Length: 592
Image (cartoon, rainbow, N blue to C red; front, top):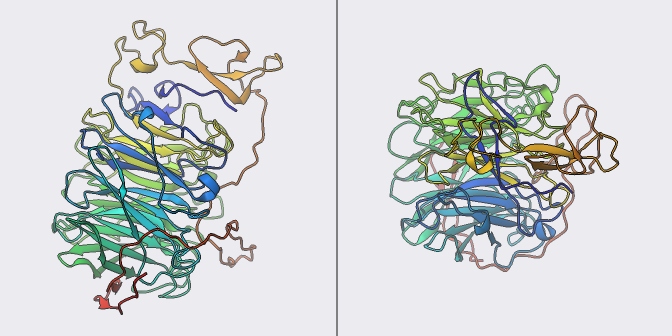
């Protein structure tokens, strides 16, 4: 097991690529480890900013550990402070009456202020919940308070038509205020729902109110041109107000959609209105270079206002942009306007140094205006980037400009203690302003990090340097001597257990001076092998047989779990909306 590193680590000399003569913007890392973390918890598989849960003026963060405790799952909450995220403030959140294989924490998100009390609220997915059928899934809403997240406020959301293997809650998000009533709303994906075709998928919207989330307002969304096994709802996100009408809008992924090519994928933007989401406003997005197995829409997100024109923009990621080693993975930005997003003019983002196998675009998020230039910026994950070892991972910041995201350069960061198969960049998110310096911070989840055991996981908050007395580019908390510009951040050292002068890159520590039994990294280091799954489990990702004749694969089998006993909000009349048509009422479901 690797030696634990200090909580704060400078990126300036360790693992950030920047333009010539430019300092990196997000120059400090704070690493988060679960206090009771163990092997295969997958802590960091889901990350999100939480908003200001306790009203202290500092934003807080969420980290999901969906496989903790026989895959029952947990979510860890960390509060912000003047010194940044407070590692000691860790609060572990678990659902009432959760069972093994619920995967609570598979998705986590800020939910805005659902009940209008001035405290931020959150939403958590648990796609394995069995109350309405095997892996029918659920989502939980928790309200903020003066003491932070209030576990007693738990509200369990169940789809009115939930059924086996819907995987409701596999992705959840704050939706913004889609109906303009002053209360924020939430959305949950159900990528396995079969109503519009086998595994066509669905998404469910719930509106906020003065009493919290209003279960009675459930609105089910399916695409107008449903695609069997398209997995609509594979990701969901608030999009902001893309058309400037005062109502927030949604973006929904369908990463297995076949309309352009087998599993090329798609995403849908749907506009808000006084009555909620207006399904007749559907805008379908697809890759400008759509091809087999691209899986466009694997991740979707609002992008803020990248070009500062007053309209919110969106970003869409790809899971794997082509199987031939020629087409490089990408992320795509679509700018908003008076008519909504412009589907015909995608802005293609690529990593300047990417290889085909890096999986650039596997995660995307808005991060806010990190460089304080008036234009919002975006994050893109590349979890198999091998700069620090095979699949150690990277994350890129693309900066906004009057013309959209500035390309080709992006600021690149890796975990300073990153090693092979950490998967840094599998999950990325804006963190809000955790230290109150007026600038937004970022959050990255390398679920494969091994300091607490194989795949125990970690999360990193990337923030700004606030003090550098000697001007050497290394922030004071991690500078070996902040009064001596010749001394910067601590170095990484590799353990040399057999004293042969060759270090082990899997056994590292960080120190200003060379510790006994350690050597400086060299190109001829001893390799070690770790046995693990190559990627996190995806709910219901039974792969269709490709046209090339490759053998289909399925997700690992999960143990059966008994029906949930948690109290849910009463089921009531809901609406099902086919995007591209007007909503039609469905029958009233029986009370659970």
